[in-house]
Amino acid sequence: MDADVTDSAGTPADPDLPAGDTPQGRSQGRSPGKAQEEPGVTDPKEEPEPGAVPENEAPQDSGDEGEAGAGEDSEGGGGDGDGGRHGSDGKSTAGAQTWADHPKDGSASRRKRPWLRWAALGASFLVMISAGAGWWLYKKLDGNITTDTSAAAELKVYEKERPTPVAMDAQNILLIGSDSRSGDNREYGRDDGGSQRSDTTILLHLAADRKSATAVSLPRDLMVEVPKCRTGDDKESREQFTQFNSAFELGGTACTIRTVERLTGIRIDHHMVVDFNGFKDMVDAVDGVEICLKEPIDDKDARLELPAGRQTLNGEEALGYVRARKTLGDGSDTERMERQQKFLGALVNKMQSNGVLLNPTRLYPVLDAATKSLTTDPGLDSLRDLYDLVRSMRDVPTDQVQFLTVPRQPYRQNPNRDELIEPDASELFKQLREDKPVAVVPADELKEKEEEKEKRKAQDEKPDDAGSDSESPTPTPTYSGSSAADDLCEQ
Image (cartoon, rainbow, N blue to C red; front, side, top):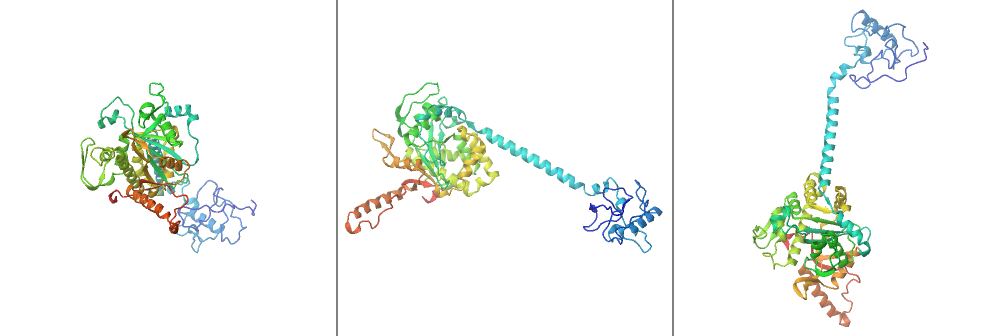
C-alpha cells in the first residue's frame, strides 16, 4: 500500500457526539482494517500495522481482542476525542467507543430519534390535507357562479351599435338586482311565473388608477329609449320609449346593457346579477350592518319592525330596509335609492374596517354568499376573476367610494315617472366615460353651494368685485350623494 494515499473525505459526523469530537480508528468508505488519517497524528505518513483488525470482523467491546484493538488505534493516531482516550498502558479506558463499536445497521440511532420521521410524516400529511381542503373550497366557490353566455352572445351580434371604450384601464360594471319572485324569492311577493325585473340597477365605474369608485343608480321608472332586443321566446321586440326596468323584463341582461350604453355612451365591460337571497347572506356573513333610524319602522309589507336609534341589521332586516317604500320617507323610489346607496356604503365600510377583505377566514363566507346568487358574464365567472376585481378595489379609500343617483326629475307627462335633468346628466356621463373625477355631497350641502354660486354671480356683475372670488376654470362636477365613509347616524 502506498503510504502517500490517504482518505481525503474526512471523518463522518457522529450524531451521538458533540460537534468537533471525532472518534479514532474510523475510515469512511473503506474496510474496517484500514486506518484513517486523523488530526494530531505524530507521523502522518506512518502506516498502521497490517492485519491489526481482520477484514469484515468488528473488534469486541472488551477482552483481549478489545485491548489489541485499542493498541492498534493508539498506534494509528493519538487524538483526544471521546473514542480515543487511553490509559498509561495504552489500553482503552472505560466507556471508550470506536466506529466499529456502533451497530452496522444504525439501529441505535434510529431508536434514539424515531420522532423525527414521525414529525416529517405528520407534517407532510397536514400539508396534503390543507392543500386538498383549499382546492375543494376553491372549486366550491368557483362552481357557485352562474355564467351568462346568452347575454355575451347577443351583445356580440349588436357589437357595431355599442360605444367604443375611451379609458382603457378603467372598468365599468353594471350591477343588477333581480326582482324575480320565483324559487327562493317567492316569500317576497307573488310568483308571476319567474318573470325578470330589475329592482335596482347601478353603474359602477372603477377609475383606471383604482383610487376611486363611483356607483350611479339608474331609477327603475326613468323614461328611456329601449332598443330592439331579443326576447325570451326568441323573438325581437320593437324599439320603444318606455320606463327603464322594462328592458330587463323584455330582453334580460343584454337588453339592459344596450339600453344603458345608449343612454350614457359608456361601454359596459362586465355585468353582475344578484338576487334577494345573495344580498341577505352577504349581510349575515359580515355579522350585520349598523344603521341609525330617526323614527321607528313598522312595515308589514316589508316585514320590518325596528325601533328608532342606532342598531345593527341582520340580512332579513337589511333586505326589508332597502326595499321598503310605503312607510319610509315620502314613499318615492327616489328616496329608496338614496337609502340603498347609504346602506351599501355602510356595508363596504364594514368590510374594509373589519379587515374582511384581508382575512381569508372572514372573507370565505362573504364570497360563498355572493357567488351562490351571482350571475356574471364570462369575463367574471371565476373565483380568480372576482378575486382580482376585489383586490384592485381593496385599497380605495372609503371616502372615495361614492354613491349618487343620475340627475333626474319628475317626467313632465307623468309625475310617477322620471326624466333626466340636462345638461347635468350628460356632464356626469362624460366625466365617467373619460375617467375624470366627480364629487358628491349631501343634498342639503349641495343646495347651499348652489345658492352661494348664485350669489357670486350677482356679485360678479359689479365691476369692483369682478374676479375676486372666481372659480377654477375646470371645477370638479358635484352631485348629491354619499360616500362609504359617511356615518348613517350623523346625517
